[in-house]
Length: 67
Image (tube, rainbow, N blue to C red):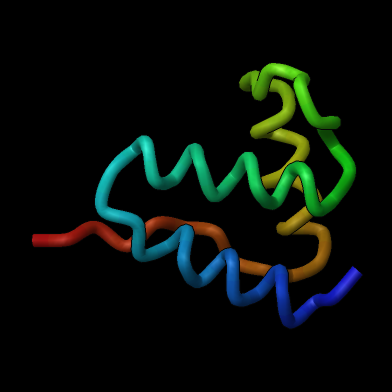
């Protein structure tokens, strides 16, 4: 697992413009972390696992709101 890859994806998460973009990036990270497999539906539980894993690694995921 590359921490640099995860930090870059988290940076993209923080700057997403829509909820759809946010969910899509979270799903990509979930695949990368082997939280979900191909063909599996991305759920709220998976989303929480991704966010918790990133937090445990010290990676910030708070979204920056656009004005």
